Length: 77
Figure (cartoon, one colour):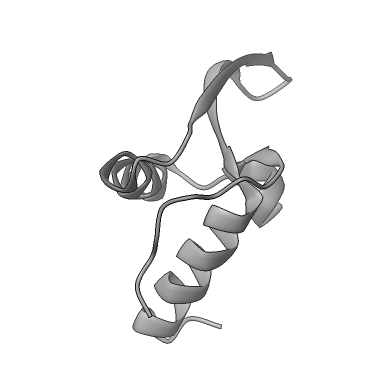
């Protein structure tokens, strides 16, 4: 089953969803998939001990489906 548009879940960052930094490559892949599908993306400026800058927020249900597909296609557990 492929990803579909129409996500309405709580907006979360990749860091909050994955419980670790996603990295720039994975972040770019997720952003490109979201744009391609027309998924709503919000931006937030954050300041932490390790990072200061803009982060992207995605609907949680989009991330759940994206990473379910991502991990199953790559056999990552």
